[in-house]
Image (cartoon, rainbow, N blue to C red; front, side):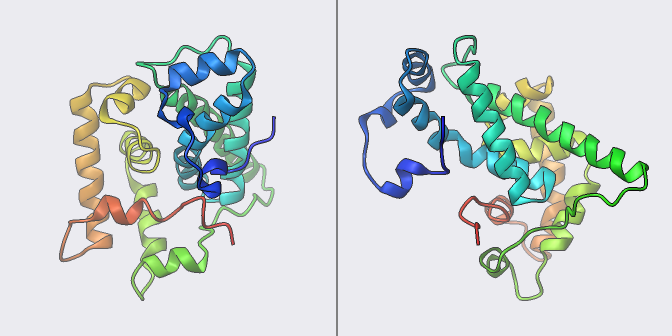
Amino acid sequence: MYLTMNTSKRQGRRDPLGELDDGTLLAMARRGDEHAFAHLFDRHSDGVFRYAAVRLRSRDAAFDVVSYVFAEAWRQRHTIEPQDDSLRPWLFAVARNCTARQIRSSMRHDHRGEVPEQRTPDHAERVAEKLDANSVFPAVIEEIDRLPAGAREALTLHVWGGMTYEEVASELGVEVGTVKSRLSRARARLAKVLHPDDATGTDATIVNLYTPEDQT
């Protein structure tokens, strides 16, 4: 099955299927309805892309993750169990495993003395223009890398992945209060880089660091 990012969004047509929840669309996909599955892709692919792009520092690698995640979703559509009629927790569990494998592979190459694939931020002009003239992008990425692993995962899943506090808590196996605490500390640290004099708007700024539309 071939899918492209934001298919129905780009076409700009309203489709009644877009009003259905994930569980209903998945049930239709199980009966072979590829159009219903395309709606699931359109609904969740952006979040999966942003999560993978931030974790892997590469849009190309992120597109590979998206392709893998939704290929697995189609292959396993008969056994997937949505959580509260949402497919997002399952999709992000697969995305986390996929990105973790790529990161471990890159680290093994580093230890062997091989030249690893370049993982520097792949930011197009459009992304750079969203930040200030001094380009704080590298500083933000560096600060994200310095976050404790739990805070970094919570941040990427919630801010870029679009998951709720409850979904992040379920995915990470922690309490909702723990997720909120980790996010609060992460936001405070990033706000010092993004807005030295004003911590407001932190999420709105960092979520725009990677978007599928930055495909130049």
